[in-house]
Image (cartoon, rainbow, N blue to C red; front, side):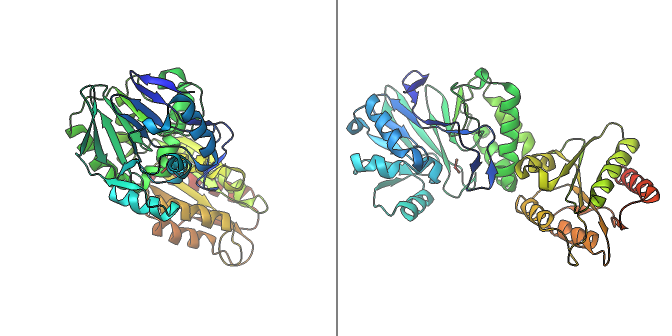
Length: 395
Ligand code: FEO
């Protein structure tokens, strides 16, 4: 059933309550998600984006209950990724010749995925389409936010920015708008989405946010492609993005480790104690990597000014869980964060050195040689770990 966004603009998307993993198994979605598709019924009838392919038939069926599909004048594909374009093949079977407006890169993406020669109409920043009743759609390329083909569409008069992935959250809700949902959920899912998806593109994002601001477009509504639509103070999420895109950090140190026989775990707890003693104001969080959600941990890293990484030595190296997580942090291109390493060992003891090298390679400033201990930490070693924590807090 379509839901009104404003005047003749309607939401015709899909709420995916069951979704627990997104991008394959790469991103945890504890609270599900939505795939937002929008129908504009002015003198022209326009569909903006569709839904993920498992819901394609349902989407087309529902849309056909709302309008005669032949009445759609054109489609806008703000982004070719399958969670927004996945219902195009099912829809285009009914209206094969209707134009699809998208960027040149989106043509490559849509052709590459669906192998169809649809009626693509390439647009670039500043191109406009008259949709009647004095309203226009203006396109703004959002290259690398987060794919090379991404773009946003702005609707004049109603002042709606259809921002696609930007400003979204993975949050399933029957409510359409930001003022209708739990604000903690909304904030947590927004920052997690930014930390896990947008962090690598911070320099581009800073430039693009500046460009959008310079366009001086009045924005009353930001209609994203995931989660709620921002209508109550919509610029609040833009302001957050400006903050987050500037190598964001809070007064937080996060300790992340994996452990085999709890020696490294004991060190983690003692290091946390030391940090807390040296700096009572700093937020210290301790996570066993093997028992934590990796995307939630990335959000903690995003908020941190420093991360302290621990692994026991295993086969002259580190546990693969720790290596994998450092790889994930490297992919996200964090800037301006410090790091230190720790770990227990039984024989050769390379883990701290390996972590230091990997963390430096991942773009972190390694501020200490690290702390390692042979065998399970006795009372003296535990005191040393507390002292190491104090040193880290000071560094
Ligand atoms: Fe929500 Fe980049 O797709």
